Image (cartoon, rainbow, N blue to C red):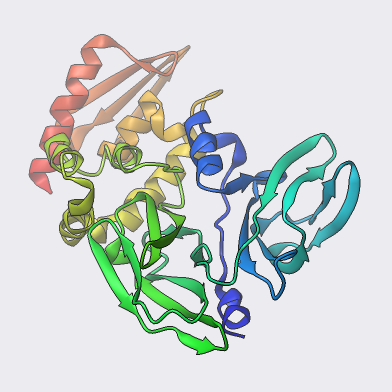
Amino acid sequence: AALACASAHTGVHARDASALSDATRTAYGQYGLIDLPSGAVGRFFFLASATPDSTKVLFIVGAVPSDGLDLALTRGGAIVHRFHMSPGKFLQTLRLAPGVYDLTVGSYAQSVVVPGLGRTALAQPIPMNSTAIIGSDSAIDVYLEAYGASDAPVTLCAPGWCDTLALRRNGDVSGGTVQVPLSRFAPGVTTLVLARGWDSAKSAVFVGFSYPIVDSFDHALDALRYLAPPERLDSLRTAAPDQRPQAWATFMAQYGSRLPAYFSRVSEANKRYGERGTPGWQTDRGSAYLQLGDPDQVFVEPDVEIWVYTRYFGRLRFDHHRLVPESRQMLATLVAQARSVR
């Protein structure tokens, strides 16, 4: 019942699948997130069933596309179960025998390994929003189950913090949902560890921004390259993993209020200045726009744009959308002037 209640808050946020880097896809696979067709993200979680020859399987998908999504779960070429998903969020629970399955649609196929869970084990923590968005989410709900009659303390830990839990027991199953403030997580991937005595089970949480997609702490800082000075971001990069949540909290106290406007501008840069294979915020014109805002005047010639910033007493020249060498130095000068004004 606790899981059914918590599942109402399940969310995996939408993103453009074409924007995923190979590194991000690798990280998704490493931590159990499945990159589904049409930009959806799915994830399987496993809970112990009443008998050892079956496992309770929870399949969560967020951001199902507007035309829905149909998947089949097969084993040995035979269809075991069909998933029909309406637009929005999707969650379904079923029981399966332990073993290897394939999640398929058309030519797409993804292997799924269903484990067998004993009645004295720990279930993998289930983050009910597997990808939390800074600025939108304030906490992550995590559903937990532990099995057996052990009275040993149960803990949930991540780099920088550890909590001892009081789970509700019903027979030989102890479970419940805990709420972890997002302030405890640094952006990127954080591994949650549920432990009792010598037993442990792990699950990953992705914390990032609505765009760009981030799969590591360093990539998150790369996404902020135009928000804060390089030396401020470098001070975060050197923080030890268990110190990152506190270092990030300090950074957010200084820059958090600017994040909504910054990522609104990132979105606008993507609309205006995207080039084939490169999102707008990473292009030369997007870089100038993010750091300086709209120019006061624009002069357009064949294959040339000249952006005039009268408020900073300078101009930038783009040749075929690329900053010419002398304008790269000018951009740094204008950015320094803009920051001094702020």
